[in-house]
Image 1 (cartoon, rainbow, N blue to C red):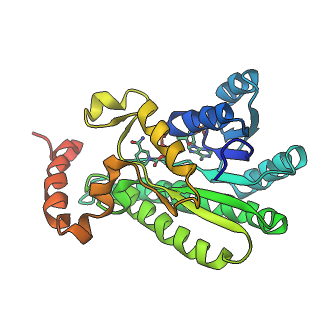
Image 2: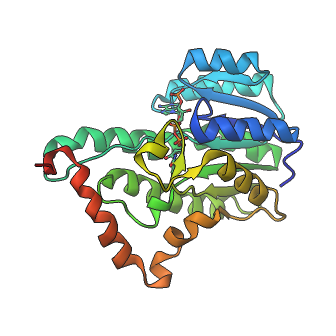
Length: 253
Ligand SMILES: NC(=O)c1ccc[n+]([C@@H]2O[C@H](COP(=O)([O-])OP(=O)(O)OC[C@H]3O[C@@H](n4cnc5c(N)ncnc54)[C@H](OP(=O)(O)O)[C@@H]3O)[C@@H](O)[C@H]2O)c1
């Protein structure tokens, strides 16, 4: 896709990967609107000439009013990125994990669906546009300490595939961004293997600019996760990652 003349809404663009991609799209020449709940950050971004909109994707009314506000100001909107995602540790031996599971699904999966539903009629009416959904290497290679996170991202992957098939012929495409571990907000301290945000964003923008746009945006570091099952390394890698279960508070000591 031509990154220089899009009108892009990045829901979940107030921090981390979303914020960096907002900057990259703007630097490439596109008009960028950032959505999120954090009013203070939205005000800062408005000061940097981004469009901004307050939105909580767990609340359908909030999503509908954000959609109305964005389309009133940016009727040419052609790209919607569903970036929000929360990652929570869960110990499945303790039924108290259920609240974390419910919250994770409501944000990562149902929230993604809410945002897509809100903008689908607009993009179909335009006859051209792109949804960018966001999954994770963990969608393809589970990380056992975060079971519902993995399930939610595998679900968004499957949903993205079905959405692409259903929108075929409308001019609206679906691109799935599949990040590996990326060093946002101090995460490099937790995971020394996390990819620096800057290099990750450069690779993502390069892949997005390919014609035709790939269905999946796979930076080099995520290929091992994405293709583990095909490559026959899946069982060994899941077992290796299960060692991280020791980080669960209930499994220590
Ligand atoms: N970083 C990684 O290593 C990594 C790896 C694989 C996949 N991913 C995925 O990439 C995406 C971004 O991750 P990140 O690490 O950049 O996370 P982050 O820094 O925590 O950013 C999450 C963004 O989502 C927004 N958000 C969260 N809940 C929301 C809600 N209910 N309504 C509206 N916005 C909400 C936050 O904005 P507000 O707080 O302003 O609402 C924030 O802008 C996520 O989907 C994550 O699962 C990340």
